[in-house]
Image (cartoon, rainbow, N blue to C red; front, side, top):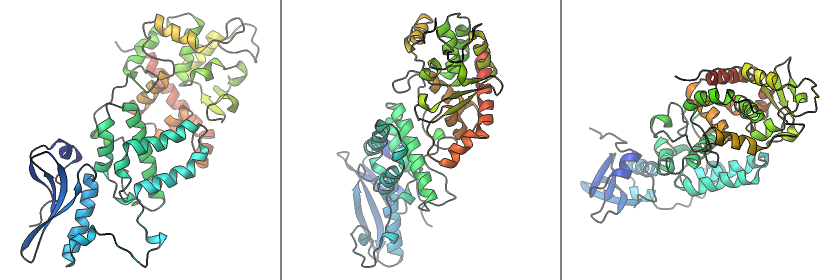
Length: 399
């Protein structure tokens, strides 16, 4: 009776310490020497003789890669060939680019090169390449079609808690690369993306702390309603600006620079011109009932459309005003910008709104032209539902 395949998991492989052979099934074993050295081996029987072949160090060859090699060796044995040929380099006179096996690393580099021109920030370009190089190197030699959940989990788990923000971004980048490979026909069209979070990796990886988000400390969304109640009790102009910033999930600079001319009371929208947006594209913000109330409270008697909404004696406020307000309220450990992460966590964990709608609400750059057109159309009304739900959540302080 054939032995079951894929007995081990990435977690078990990392945790195993006992010397000896540990079977993954199908002839694949993890060997641990008495000194602790770890390597992969393939065992098979030919002409009544049991033979063991070394595949390489477990630190250089992931579980997924070892399974791929073992699978090729099993096929060779079944066809009467020497399984050692699988490890030997072959020169194929009929080779052509069309039948070349594409690795994850090759496709990732090519994919980044095709889309990076749309990234305005040079640092963003470097971060994509550097994060993949530094933390996903184990995937680079794998054929892109063989990258599986164990492979992805294997590169994420070591940094998931120690470098939470880096790990979160790396997961998203791997997911996007694998999605693009599927579109290109390099992965099965009906396969699940092994880097997908909701309903997949979310079940395997431990929850990350939501207090810190890179350089911008964020308030856990569960504490946001209580904080918002305290904020609304404040009468300072900086409090209204911070309240509006949180309700719209805007960047602080966008709210501080807002003018009355950008507000449309009839359409209940705030249109931020391209010149004031990080991505250099006009952004329409649907205003929730809470955001409209803030505007009404800030509206002067003699309104001039060119005036800034949250100005004091005609002068714009600065980020420092809101930072000082947070300190006075006892929340000096969080930042204004961090509330965008608070909103993102709440929307992702507590609502069923699609990721695209949430990303649009945050005015994150969208490369696809069709998606950008959608943002300007019906997505505004979908985002209106999202922002109203956020306003309602903030207004209901937990007891």
